[in-house]
Image (tube, rainbow, N blue to C red; front, side):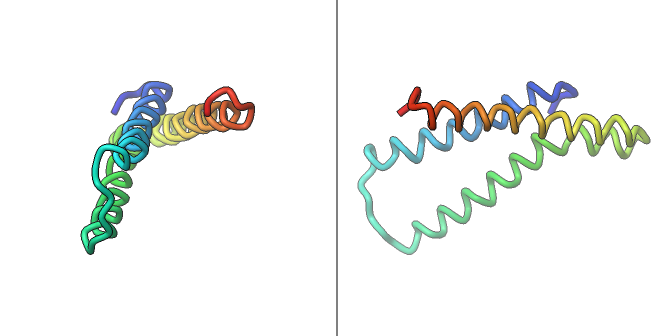
Amino acid sequence: MTKNPLINAICATLYITLIGLFMFYGTQLFPQKDTILTPIAMISLFTLSAAIMGYIFLSQPLILFLDGHQKTAVKLFLQTIAAFAIITLIVFLLIFLGIVK
């Protein structure tokens, strides 16, 4: 991704938002049929999400780490986690305060 932890955290949030919107509105748009494909699709989505989030959070820190910039790599990783934690906290506050229903 980038060397900007805020941009990385925002990208992760946007990805999660898109998946959440798809899951929320997808149940209204598509007929609900429980088949063997449903758990396969959910596990596949989970695996894909883990890979995408791993890329967003770890790609640039790993490159920095392998280039010999260990302190910078750890700092970028922790700053990205912190930025994402703040965004997550804001989302929970919006829910708990009833601002978003």
